[in-house]
Image (cartoon, rainbow, N blue to C red; front, side, top):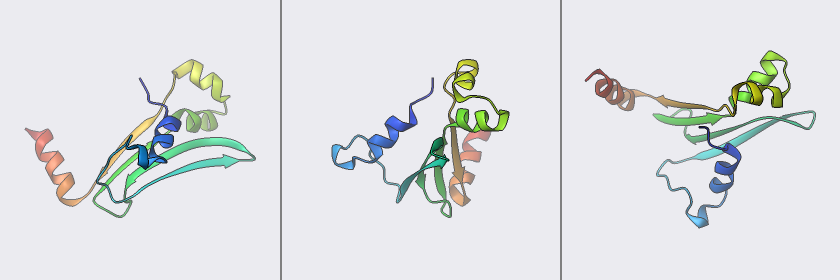
Length: 102
């Protein structure tokens, strides 16, 4: 299943509770809005310019906008849909490719 990204965001915002522990240098979140309507949440760990980045976002909201459908209709049709991306560069990417090639 998919994890509620808003719940994960809440855990990111309370580091004192130690709900999420990471050695990544940076984390951030962006919640896009259009005329007061939420357009989707995106969470990031790492750096877009660095060697390692994790990106998670609400694909269902993007799909609803693209298909010009109501968000609830998209959820009913596809279920909760998030996208999880891992961006690797240099030695991180080489290591993963070598491991996958085994």
